Figure 1 (tube, rainbow, N blue to C red):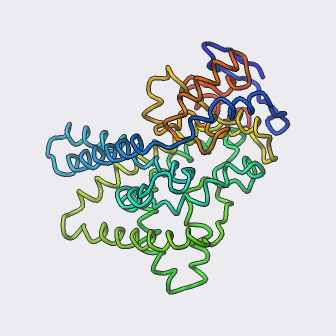
Figure 2: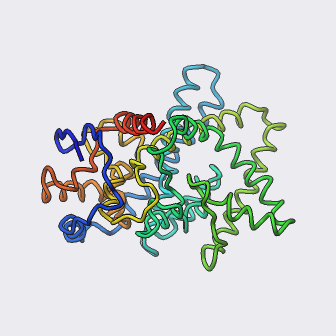
Length: 359
């Protein structure tokens, strides 16, 4: 792979590696486990204040955007709400990986404060995201969170981003309309479960019906989302259009921000073949410091997404220290350094150039 390295960050990679054929780097994989054994415990003293503070700021910004009559305050409140609610919503990723019993009550609190109000209850991610981490599924047609975007036509990238703008309306329809229809029509319910009950980007993915504890959580979360979606619709004759439209606009901004982050979470260069763990790592992206804005557009540890694929159960607050240890141990020019990138714009440019070549 041709590249220019500066401070351990890849500045340009003009040739595409044969990722599916990449042999495993046993030294990197062993170091990832050995050097981080003491970092795997989730700390409630970090999770709870971070989540609750982000949610509180988000709803405060939303309230300002809805109630104020001054244009600059509307914009400021909306920006604060979008950034902080995005951070609060990103904890759904942690819910799929935290060990049972390590954060008592966190799943319930997250769903009540963020998941149901934003119509993204955790059942839509739990039981789905872990399939993205399965060694035999990553980058294949069975991966719910993978599309070979770098190998697709140029128009797919703007469509990928613009589609996120419609997420709030689609979710209102999903819960206010499809949920009750599914109760009345079993065949439609099976289709809703398979195609409209997961936060994915792979349109070919079909979800299996839930079982066990997930089935019980799904039931109450979907019921709560149904009543909340109805309340949003019923709010229009009571309070007018402004509260709903303001909320939809802010959530659309959150969805677009997340879609941009998703666009640069991987290089999307696999053509569907099963990959080694090292190949999966090299197809994933770290944006470590000093990238100044990565903490905003890739919050809650998502700036270390490649490292997360090496250590999926590592709590977000430990990823920075794990990255520092691995960087110091493995050194410049190592396989580990090859997934470190400078920021969002260079990554978007790289993927766009790849689609241009395909086009």
